[in-house]
Picture (cartoon, one colour):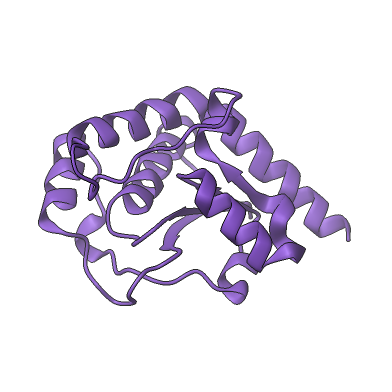
Length: 163
C-alpha cells in the first residue's frame, strides 16, 4: 500500500491541509483507494489540534478531517514508514536529508514534483503571508500534480519492496 507523508514546520497548517487535499484528490480519482496519507512537522510540538483558522480554511475548500488532526514531530521511525515524504520548503528538504541520510531519496519538495522546479510554499505564520492564498496554492498544486505524486510514491513503494 503506497504511502505519503506531508511535512511542514509545525504540522499545524500546510502539511495537514496538503494531506487532506491529497486524500480528497485520491478519493475522487480512485474511490477504492489503497493509500496512506498523513502529515508531520520538522519542529512540531506533539498533540496540538489544527488551529481554528486552518480548520475554517479547510472547510471553505471542502476538506474534511482537520477536526481530528493532532500535530506530531518527524523522526526516523516515522519517516521510514512512508514511501514518499513531501516537504513545503527547501530548508525542510535539506534538514531531513541531512539528518536522515538513509531516507534522503524519499524526500521531495511539493513544487519540484508538480511544477518541475523547486520553490517554497510560504508559512502562513510568517508576516505578510495570506493563509487563504497558501491553502489555495496547496490545493492547486495537488490537483495539478496528483498523477505525478501518485506515480512517484508508487515507484518508491515498488523500489522498497524489491530490496
